[in-house]
Length: 231
Ligand code: DC
Image (cartoon, rainbow, N blue to C red; front, top):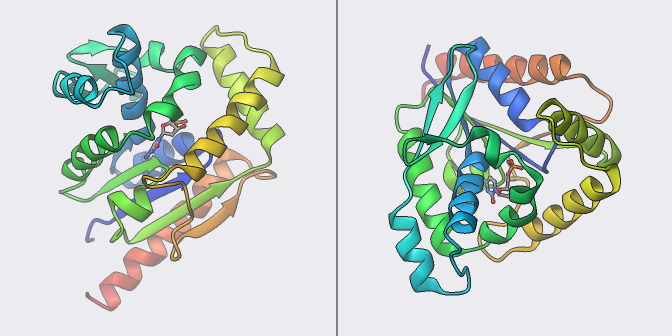
């Protein structure tokens, strides 16, 4: 069956990554977490004290950054920066506090989008993020846009952080999510918006399994239709 591109966009902590990972596993597709790439850049900028208001410094830093992904023994994808595994570090609140700001920088976005397109050139990919269906792969056969109630999102994120032994109070998480929603949705470069042809799914009252099943059901329908009506 012809491989398709599945773009999953939406707000932070709506279950995008978990859904994308499971959908990719079920379909035997590659999974790419584009947010991890912005987090990796943020990690590098913080570690090297890059002044984000200085375009020359930003460009120089971007030339030093090589992001890659590897699947570990458990089957989970881990993020590498210049060959070093930074998966745990980029999930910390410290990175979440700065990542949206870094993601507003055009040079950063241009560099990430170009890498993301290369990763998707063979299709058969599920990529999650904020601008995947609008900017990175506007031609994606399936676009999903996830939303959920802010409290539900905050509790999900708190549980994720706890699993990584990072105890953060719920108010700080809500504040961080709201702040990031605001920056991600209002930035000039590729703001977070639902693509006109995206399927919206509100995940407030559904489980991850239900989310995954729904996306797979829509994906399979698309694939079958594309066999019947070749492009
Ligand atoms: O998905 P995440 O929460 O790990 O993403 C972290 C940040 O990266 C998010 O606040 C905005 C930015 N991001 C982006 O601007 N574009 C993407 N395609 C993915 C993430």
